[in-house]
Length: 461
Image (cartoon, rainbow, N blue to C red; front, side):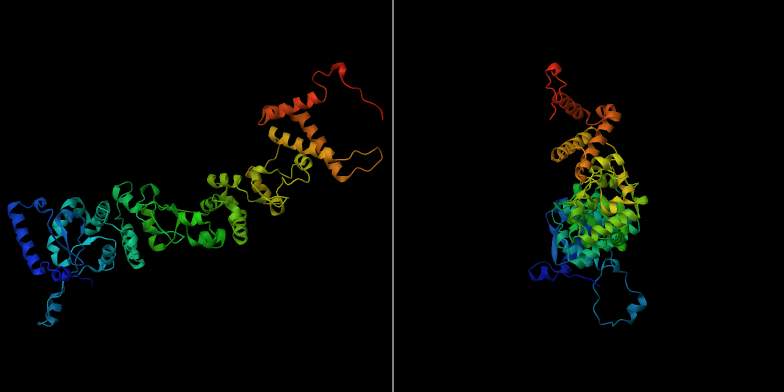
C-alpha cells in the first residue's frame, strides 16, 4: 500500500517528522483555544509547514490545493494481537480505492498530504465546507484539481499511460455513481477542458474546444468500433480529420463520456462527417468507398431521415458519371426522363453504372438529381446543341444522316419543343433572365431587330 516519508526533507537539513508533528499539535491546540474553532492561518501563509508526499513542505498559502486522500481503516484488534510485539508501528496508508490514483496525482503535479499528518486535513479542506459535507475527498478532488490548474501547477500531459488510466478509471467510477459535477458548472467545464481523453488518432484531447487548456482540437463525439466497421470496414479508413474528432470507444468510459456531454455518433453522423471532410469521398480507398456505398444502399430508409446527412450527400461528389468522373447528385440529370436523355445524349451528365439502376436512381432522385430544365440548364443545353450542330455535316436529300448528326437534331427538336410548351415557366423560373437574354440575341441575329425589308433574300443554289 502506498505510503510516503519525509526522508528528503530531513536529509537536506529539514525538520524531522516528529518535530513537525509536535509543531502541528501545538498549532492545532492554539487554533482551537484562540480562534474558537475557526483558525485564521493567514498570518502563517508564507510558512512552508504542510508535509506532502515526496518529502516536500508546502506553504500554507497553498493549503487549498493539497489533496487529502482517505486513509485505510485501522487493523482489527485481533490482528494487532497477532502481530509481533517488537515490530514498529506501520506507517498510515491510503485507502485502497486511492492506491492507483495517488501516484497519478503526483505525476500530474498535485500536492498530496503525507498520511502521517492526517490531522491537517481540516486545514487543507477549510475552503470547501460545502463539498466536505457533500461527500468527502471524492467530492473535493475535482475542485482541487481545478484550483491546482489555476495556479499553473497541473500537468496532465506528464501522466504516464498507467497513471492516465488510473485517473480516467476514477472519473468513470464517479460518473457511474452520479458523483461528477453538474453540467454547466465550472468544475464540469474544467473536466471537459482537460487534454486527457484518447481520440482515434492516438492523441490526448479535450472534449470542448472553447474550454480547452491548449490548442488541441477538441473531440466532438465517440463512435463504437461496430458502427465504424459496418460503414467503412475499419477505423483505419477514416479521414485524419475525423479520427481527430472522435474519441476511442470504451465500455468502461461510456458513463464518463455521457456525463461530459460527449455525443454518441451514429452511422448517419459518421457518414456525414466522413464525406464532409477534406476531399470527402475521393479520399477513401476503394474498399472503404465500396463499403460506405453498400451501407447507404442497404440502410437508406434509416439514413434518409437525417437532414445533415441528406444535405452532405446532395453536394458530395460520390456519383460515378458516364464520363468516369465523380459528381454530386444535384449536378447531374435523371436519365429516366426522355427529354433529358434526348437533349444530353452522349454527354457525361448522367449517373452511370450502379447509380443508373434501382435502388440508387431512386436515392439520387431524393438527393436532388435534376429531372427538369430550369433557365440555366436550358441555356447550357442549347449551347451544347449549338456546338454540336456546327460540327454536324448537312447532307443532301436521300443521303444517310450520321448517327451523331441525327442525335444532334433530335436534341435540337426536343429543346425547341420544350421551349414552345414550357417557355413562359422557364422565363419566370431560375435562370430566366439568362434564357431571355439568349433568346433576344437569337432573335436579333435571325433578323428580328432592324431587319424589315433589308433582310437578304434566300438564293437558290
